[in-house]
Length: 251
Image (cartoon, rainbow, N blue to C red; front, side, top):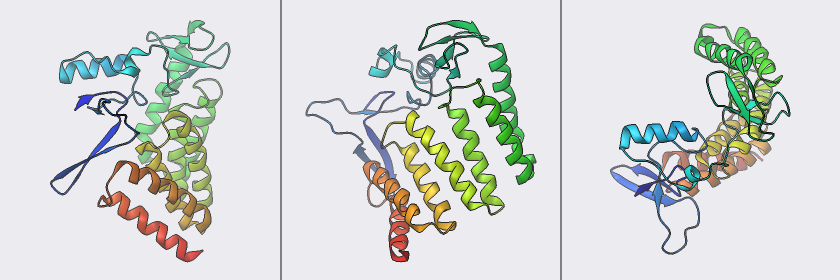
């Protein structure tokens, strides 16, 4: 199968068998494409092209790579002029995709470096310290550093949710996960594995919080995504199916 940065199949193993399922409707004669690693919603074009050239020795000309105007919220800065989506064009300068202004992004870059340092060191924090530091960093990034629907904000919300769950704040954990999912739904395609995993995660948090009705809603979404990509023998499909049955029995 050829590569595309926007694949239309999912390949997984069940024992020693390789199972391939189409993740979108395919017309007769359509090319079947897998992804060799970098997907267009997870990595910018220049990075994808470099990775594929280095590992597989070819220049990718798939649809997302041909569409220069296609832009994801992934890693977008917040434009200083219009608050639109801006991307770095050098180490310290950015250009807005929406209003096309180019500006000095040194301050934004420095604050993103602080964000990455926090994530690298967060395991040394107590849960309460981690929640405080993550919230402060999220508020900083949301105040004009990154776009409101950037992956960084979603990541910080997800980390906050994790630490809330550790200390038993399950409702707060669920709130943070919902806010994170609201962003991820703008970044990833409907029916993507990334969203399926997030739906699965929040369904378990909601179940532990005693909110079985909402947990079932998200578990059903997760099951829909998993069955789109995987066979019924897949462990993820088995796990989410079992959770759905259990939740229905509790309602």
